[in-house]
Length: 218
Ligand SMILES: CC(C)(COP(=O)(O)OP(=O)(O)OC[C@H]1O[C@@H](n2cnc3c(N)ncnc32)[C@H](O)[C@@H]1OP(=O)(O)O)[C@@H](O)C(=O)NCCC(=O)NCCS
Image 1 (cartoon, helix red, strand yellow):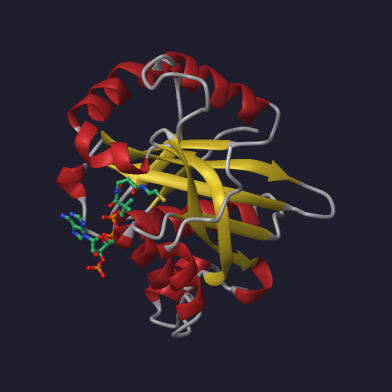
Image 2 (cartoon, rainbow, N blue to C red):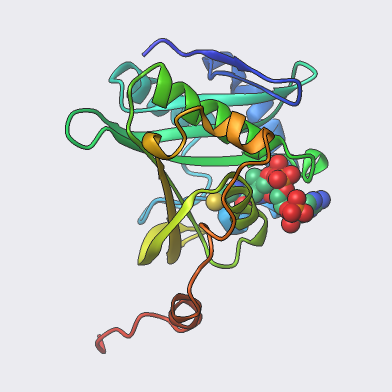
């Protein structure tokens, strides 16, 4: 897939390049404590064992195979984060899943909601995807606000769903299908037309998420 450059006054989202390795390494290192609790890890692989370079190679290979859209986020021509769309499938699913991070110094400026909207609109309207999903740990209040602001619809709790910071972690999952946003997510968000309450999480799922999945004794 050719990687696009998506622009907005708050942020530019452009295709990841091999030469981003050094600046990403620096940003990830400087923001260790900020990112670590939310960082996807791989079972049986020590954190830090995979270099930024090899992770870029993996992402670019997936982009070539049309299963990923790896973007870096820039503000004033400086790299401030990443937005990766992965598990892109076409055909009868035509769906994908999206993740993101930014450096702490630019948090709270509404950059991520805009970047998520830009990437999702691109995949819906330029690439013909039908559904976009975002899955978030129950403890990640800031990220839950991102999907709430954009009106991603709550779909449910997935137990021990993604390996995060060394452990299988429950996630709340949210999605949007293109039919819900015929004029685009960004236009709906900026036009103040996000329907209230669609991202609300039922109390029963909060209760479940506060209690670990019961497992049989080992
Ligand atoms: C989640 C994250 C991407 C949000 O990005 P963002 O561009 O700051 O998003 P927003 O500006 O819309 O802020 C979202 C919420 O973050 C919180 N927030 C605002 N400023 C903040 C700050 N300085 N520090 C921490 N949280 C802050 C607020 O609750 C805000 O909601 P509000 O706008 O209703 O007040 C960012 O916090 C981040 O990178 N966190 C670490 C990595 C991570 O959690 N990735 C997502 C995994 S699912």
